[in-house]
Amino acid sequence: MAKAETPKKNVIAEYLQLVVSVVVIVFVVRSFIFEPFRIPSPSMDPTLKTGDYVIVTKFSYGFGRQSIFDIPLIQDRLFWREPKRGNVVVFADPIFPRQKKLIKRVVGVPGDVIEVIDSQLHINGEMAERDYIGPGSSNADLETSGNFFTETFPSQNGKPHEHFIWDKYPNAMFDNFGPYTVPEDHVFFMGDNRDNSSDSRSSSLGAVHRKYVMGRAQFVLFSLNIEQTRRRTNQWKWSNPFRWGRFFKGIR
Image 1: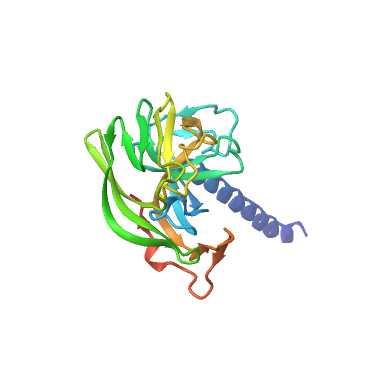
Image 2: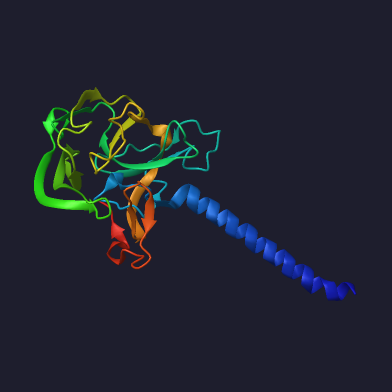
């Protein structure tokens, strides 16, 4: 009887060992290597769309409490590397760090002076150059239109950074801001959808302490065709469920 039960026990032991191994691998990968993140809003339009699933590298700026499953022993950062202007970064909302994650573009690092004058961004007194691309619509369901630009940040370590932005309204709430000096150990973020982004220009967020930084968004893994309705709810277009052209798309 004992001999008949031995193979069954071995199978159960092997199964449990496999489950434990998978859990450990997932923990290590999500904590130290990369993690998927779903874009919840159009605040980074046109760079990122609602429904994009992006891959975030957890090691880009070292490791913190928010990147390693909220381990309380880590109060600040391990192996901190400062983000560069232009990086697209996922971070925890300082008010609700466990419940809410945000994604924005790095505009200012410690010591930078940030100012917005008539919607034009200035970094350390130098205006970020804009090149007009043309009019366009960010969301067909909302029937909103605006102007698309390429924006170039002043060089940091000899490397200027160019990306797309969308400017929707004249004389919007944050078209004039600052000047504001980014504090030590903080990062100043803005969304590429300049008039539809609650970011560091808002007093409810402000510059974000480095301990809330999770990682850098590297590329779009895949994209669900989700748009906002007039009621500000997300709707998945079942007739055309995927944005095939955005699969494996790099983020700049």
